[in-house]
Image (tube, rainbow, N blue to C red; front, side, top):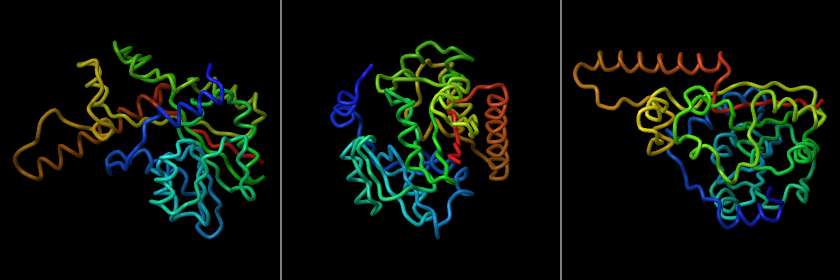
Length: 264
């Protein structure tokens, strides 16, 4: 297991810098914002994102909060976020981070799986949350359809990464919360990658060329002819995609787990 110093070196020297992303690849961030909107009040909300990267979610959250602060170990990403979105971003280790006051909403998206000591991490992060505030996080779900439902050859090599120290399902995440002293929380299953992404993996045993393609229902060819027919077919395919994702979730499979933790 990596220690804090080794991880810090990894994120400074090896971890990939993320440039701006396309509208299509922004779907996960838009979905997160939709789930968070009931908790965001641009007159009052103090918002902290831990592991904010280059600001892909900050871009969406900023109009809906009073004050926004980011924490990002990768200095290149932190600097990009600072300059692009005009926000205060710190690159300190979480143990040394000392913000001014507590926050109404603290978010950690795709962060917890990178943390070597998750219990200590959660206890530290909860100190940043106001007594009536929330901590929101998401992590990859180890009960991933391609991994456990279809068991696609080659997907394991794609899924398991050296930067991911732990993998969670609903049971292990609940046990982690209990160990951390967390009593009030809700865990939801979310599915981001599409039916055609799964078909691509099943047939080719390899990923699609980009996240943009993976998150959308993409036919292997174009649709020609009457616009009404094209529109009807696209609506039909999108409906199939939505029903497929709902079916996976009803049966306990998804690519992402989402949790809202109430401190109070």
